Structure formats: structure tokens, C-alpha cells
Image (cartoon, rainbow, N blue to C red; front, side):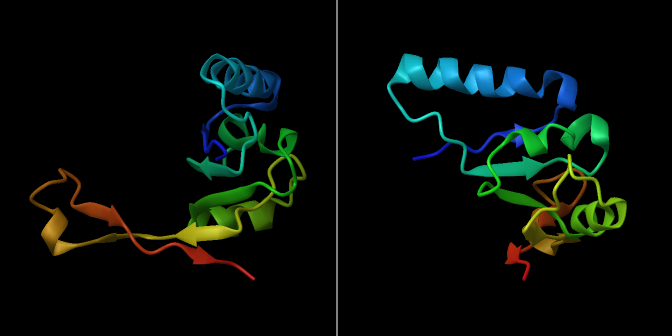
Length: 109
């Protein structure tokens, strides 16, 4: 089973993420292969290290993140292939101060 870190790092410290994954995987006797990345948002200081990972990694993020990454066309920040959208759900307002919950994940073609 691969790991799915939430990527929130600029390129200058991106290698530290892989090094941390390698150390944790080794200590626990599991694979260090990263299969999924989750973008917090599109800014380069948060997603700029994404290109350091395998091209076969599945990138997940909000629909708006994908739109902005496609617009920016930055090879260091490949757009997410799988998207979701934030939308309010009445049933979640009691549990969440913001009243927001993630919608379904969609695969982009």
C-alpha cells in the first residue's frame, strides 16, 4: 500500500518530504512508494514540490485548484487529475463550524 501525503511544500524543501517518507517506511517495514498527493491549494509555495514525485502519482485537489494550475501551466506543479468541490451540506453544519464538507471526487479526463 502506498502513502498519500498532503503536499504542502515549496521545491526547496520537497526532498525533505521524500526523505521523511523513506525514514517512516523503513522504520515500519512498508513501501516508500507514494501513490497519491493531495493539494491544499495551487500556490507554488505549497505545491511547488509536486513535480519531484513520479508522474504516475495521482494528484487530488479542489476543482478550483485544477483550474488555476492549468491556467498557470507550471511544470513544477502538474494539475490534479482527481477533483472535488467544497459545498455546504445541511447535515454537516451542526458538526462543522464552517458548515462545509467535501463533495464527491471526480476523475478528470
